[in-house]
Image 1 (tube, rainbow, N blue to C red):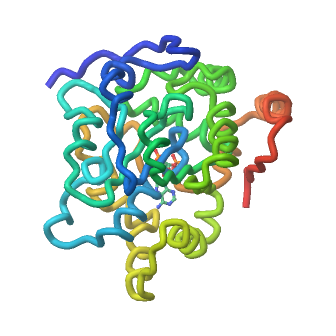
Image 2 (cartoon, rainbow, N blue to C red):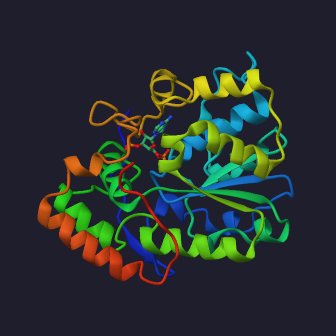
Amino acid sequence: MELPPRPTLFDFHGVSMTKYFTDNWENIQSFKARPDDILIATYPKAGTTWVSYILDLLYFGEPDCRSSVPLQERVPFLEISEPSRPKGKDLADQLPTAPRLIKTHLPVQFVPKSFWEQRSRIVYVARNAKDSAVSYFHFGRMNRVLPEPGDWSCFLQNFMQGKVVFGSWYEHVNTWWDQKQTYSNLHYMFYEDLIEDSGQEISRLCSFLGLSPTAEQRELVQAKVTFDNMKQNKVTNFSTVSMMNQSVSPFMRKGRVGDWKNHFTVSQNEQFEEDFKNKMKNTALVFRNEI
Ligand code: A3P
C-alpha cells in the first residue's frame, strides 16, 4: 500500500498544525462532551499512552472481549483525521463505554467548549521540555502523520520556536497550568513523577477520579503498565498502525527521564537553558530534567 506524503506545517490561529489535525475542525469543535467523559490532554510525547492505559485498566480492567482491542480504539484521539483510518471524533462519538476516555493534544484554547460546559474531568500530563523534544524528534522520524523532522539540531530549533505540530511546548504546558487555577476538574500531573513512583501517581489519579480499586486490582494495573510490558503488548505499542515505521524508531522507545543527555550538545544545552528561563519566567511550574 502506498503511504501518503508527509504533511506540511502551517499557522492555524497562531499554532503550528497540519491538516491531519485540522481537517475535521468544525466537527471537532461541535463535539458533544458528557459530564462523565474523561479527557486525557497532553503535549505530544508526555506519556499520553501510559496514562491512557492506566485509566482504561482502572475503569474497565481487561476482560477477554477487550483484550485485543488496540488502545487507540479504546481511547480515541479526538482531533485526528488521517487517510484510511476512522476519524477520532467519530470513534469518540461511538465509544460504548461509560465513562468515555478521550485523548487530545490540543492547546487549551482549542478544546471543544462542551468539555468546559459539561465540567468533564481532565487529566493533563506534562513532561520536561528536553525529553519531550528528544522523544518528539524520534517520533517524527518514524511517524508519517508528522512533517519530516530534519536532523536533530534543526528539529531542536523548531521545537524551541514552536514550529512543530501542536505548537509551542512552553505555551501548552503554561496555558494548561493556568487553566487548572480556575477549572477544578483538572488534574495536572508529571511524567517524571510517574517514573519515580507510579503507585503514588495512580493513587492520586484514583482520588481525583473517585475510584477505589482493591489492592489486587491496583497490583494488576501496575504490572501491566510497566514500560517493558507495554512495549511487548500489541494493544499499547502501536505496532498495528501503518503510518508508523517502528524499524526507524519504536513507539515505546526508551521510557526514561534524562535521555536528552544523549542528544544535546553542551552548546545546545546552554542555548536551550537560557531560552527556557526566558520563556518560563512567569510561571510557578517546576520541571525535573533528571530524577
Ligand atoms: P520516549 O520516546 O522517551 O521513550 P506519548 O504516549 O505521549 O506519545 O508518549 C510516548 C513516550 O512515553 C515515549 O517516550 C514512551 O516510551 C513513553 N512511555 C510510554 N509508556 C511508558 C511506560 N509505561 N513507562 C515509561 N515511559 C513510557
